[in-house]
Image (cartoon, rainbow over all chains, first blue to last red; front, side, top):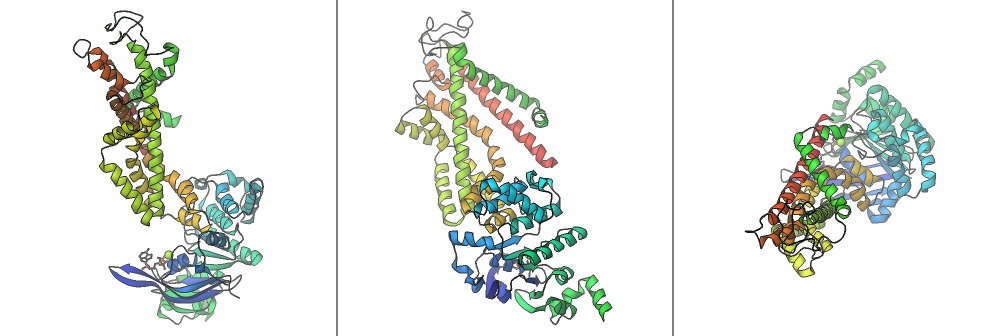
Length: 261
Length: 276
Ligand SMILES: Nc1ncnc2c1ncn2[C@@H]1O[C@H](COP(=O)(O)OP(=O)(O)OP(=O)(O)O)[C@@H](O)[C@H]1O
Ligand SMILES: [Mg+2]
């Protein structure tokens, strides 16, 4: 059974007075411990899908089943409780945290809100989380702005896994990091997926990264699905015009696919 | 200490701080220097200043010690000014945060209420409130706060509107935080700096409003206030003008001190912000 099943999801916005569909009849699903990538040019609706899946915005039509239950049927306290299972990592790890927060507070909040650890036990849990994402436990007392971008993104991942989610949405989560840090973060994500069986909805415009981490890929164009399938197969031989354009725009990929042929 | 040095960079800020420090000393030391009731009769009536070393600023129409009244008046002015400004900032910050964060109908209703309060001149509102409820220190504080919270509310709302779109607020929703906790723990503290920048103007206005209420006889009758002293002196303005002039000068200096010190704070934080 899939962790996330999205069917006929539609979200309309107004542009210049006219309604247009930012997300148009999109359907896909994500299995347990699977990574589904969403790719597509800027404005194709990737972030809008992420926000719909996380119920940060409401759709105009369609349905989302999360862990087998209609996600849109939830509201209030029931929805907040359910959020423990569905987490997110943002692109900009500095913007993703309250500028006044410390690392300990950022990690302690989900533990407190979902009653995962009583106050006395929290420091130990926070230290364990930091260790789990490869950070020094001494970082807990630091302010968020006092650690590096790569460390911050690890803290963001630690926060996301604090409530033991079955799905994490990553919207361009590695795009703002430089190449060496990006590799380490991707390693960490893969390792967490193997150990904790977390599914990822992985949004990226970088097909190289997608090929490295995703099992399947959905390529979007103007809110619609242009093509989808096995990540390696689609990237090696895209059928849609957008797919071809995306592959052509990633120089490293062109070279390696030529090497392969 | 660095912050203090930056704050004390301008002569205006130094002057402001000195005035406020003097005022604070007067307010705190009033019961030490002038124990007992400042409204008690201390000597002959209408003694001019600098005649008797025991009554350096002379006495008023009833023979009360003007210097003692001035010291005790500083206490009232400062207490009312600070308490009213704190209450106004608190009400404003809470209303503005709720309106800006909740949006929709809540925002609409709260902002209409704010509009309504803003259309009535603040002083009239305070006046009406005190005449209905009756003069006492806490009523005066409430009346002044009631007439001063709309500015902070608008500033807080505008700031919250920009903050609530930030990723970290979305992040707080994603981890399942309650909306009220998001509003007051995540958003409000980050919306405070521009709201607090209003505090010097509000404290100054609150001190003036308190004086004006007392002048009209709507202050707490059991306390000496500068406004009350000015009103008292008015009846003998031709023969003993000093009775109105002395508390008048104290009032002007205090408002000036609050304003200058406030400007210094705003300036030093602005410099810090542009540096970072
Ligand atoms: N709140 C909104 N109001 C109006 N239009 C919006 C809103 N949010 C998104 N859109 C529009 O919806 C479309 C899809 O936006 P979205 O952010 O999902 O794109 P994206 O695929 O994430 O792009 P990028 O790769 O640049 O992040 C865009 O045309 C965008 O302008
Ligand atoms: Mg996006």
